[in-house]
Length: 354
Image (cartoon, rainbow, N blue to C red; front, side):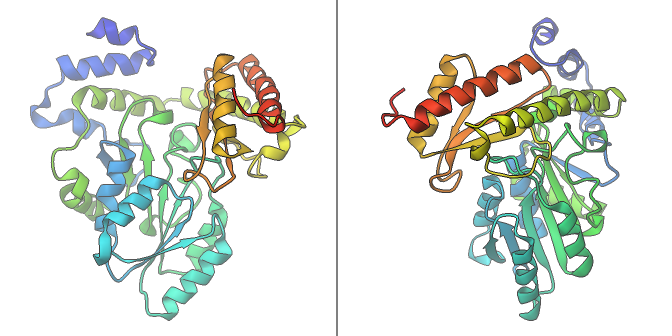
């Protein structure tokens, strides 16, 4: 087993730890579960089988029927699904325009004027489709003005590649710890599987672990994955992590520069900001164009994802791709060149057949 894991594409330390967790860890005292409590930030954390399961555990415990929930229209679908599962006994939920903090402040004032004592704002740290980032400085300012405002942030796409010790895109932003819950992923940048919830205090952690619906029936990480999680957490505490982060940031800066400089692509970027993000997106139009472009890029040996409504607004379909540290500058240049050629084909020709 160890040989098979060691020969996989996973970092050797993670693969070895996964094997050790199976063949040598003494699980009788839950030692590996305790070790996996991700000592990256001083907040107590809760482990879950996935980020989706984390939302299903946390939101029913955190929210009460008397709260008002304001959520970004583009907050991750898993968050919106967990809200919907609360049903008619849950709090009043209001969808807000994307990343519109003026609309948020208006809604907070309205909720407080109508007697709400606690208002939650649910958003993503980095949005999963377009790769744009939460205007976190503005949110910090709002939370400083309104003591009743709480934040629940899905930062699954911010884990590992940014933040001190890889703790994500919002952990260092100054959000009030006592009124902020951050949920992230142990997949994606972290390199393993599972989800993690950073909560303000030990009592909240205990309530979610013991009463959260998706954690009540032994839905936890299996020992092999726990071993890998422990190893990845240790890597996050090493100085090497900042070196790896800078390498990736260089690739992210390059891809954004090339996209901006391309006449065929620059007008198809859905966001104006050049803040680093591994998630990149080009707007092509409808689903047929997104699929046609994807097929042509795959034929060239380049893997991208087609995206269309309802994952994105109508007529905002396109291709989504991510940049990782193992990509070279040559890989990035090849991708952008191919994107320019394919986009010209599928968006300018009358026939969209691949």
